[in-house]
Image (tube, rainbow, N blue to C red; front, side, top):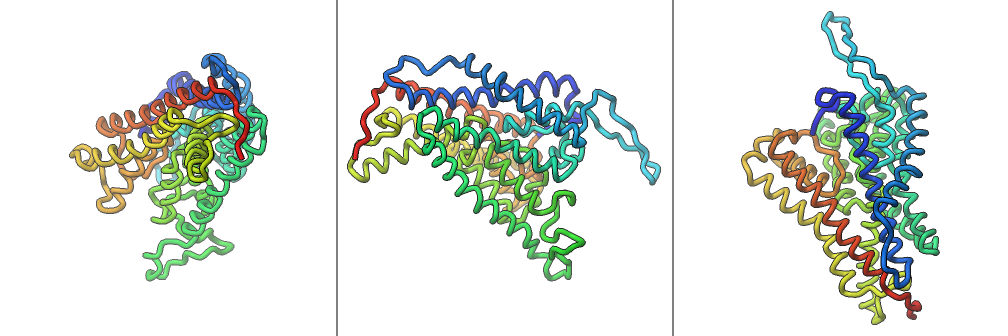
Length: 408
């Protein structure tokens, strides 16, 4: 809801926001590890130390990966400077201020930590953040790297790698079709332009399709790929404007967020969110076939289901209540500049994004106001911690249980 280059100083971006970019994924990874310990330990009295796990995540995972990625991005043209903004003069004689800054270092952890807050207002559509198709590929890979690797980590820690691969496969089976659907819808173009004799077909001269709000250096496929990855992984960064997607193309990012950010999801949070669904699925399937519900040798009982239910219901409740409040209040209605279905979608998208800790937007909504900053801020905090608390409670309960033989 803010423009980094006009709102924040270099110091604020580096010391304030970048530090939070490290702490946030470290917290998610610490909670993830705690839940995995709960599933793998037997009659244990604890699930680890939060501070130790958070420091390990920063020192052993986030800092090394960020250092490597920052060097790669800097070598490929992402700027890294403390120089003052440059005033340039255009061919028409007007002056233009070009914002600079230490971008590469923040860009690295922004992508790896599934944070998404860009140094510039247009985020990774800005050529100083994402100058080429190569950097675009590297940054998309960075978005999905830690969430996808968390599945393998889970398999190793519980002593059964097949469990990790099964969760990874479930995520991928949902992600790939939605990605392909988004690409097809965007490549199909805007049907309202068909009668105006506007060429929307791909050729050697143009990408074709719906290019509104997209960078020509990326085109349709890379824009749709980023939109799908950033909303699947609770990253929130963009290299194209989601509000300019076709209705069905824009539906894909919205659906991916409404899954609860468990299709890869955030660093750590994606896996523990998916494990909530796994535990509920195991419980229901166990009751259906008449066997004791258990997962990885741990009985799934009433307390675990209550905690898992809280974790699944909170994001949906926040979205429904938050959207209703925004549409009923005059302060919420006043910032909708696209009336009708699109305006409703913008409000729904904003609340969904905040409640599921994503951060992307249908930017036609003017969200940088006291009303929306308060509403969306509350949704962010509740959507984050009202899931972490029941997950940790469930982890402690599982850790204290005995391991039982797998029933037939």
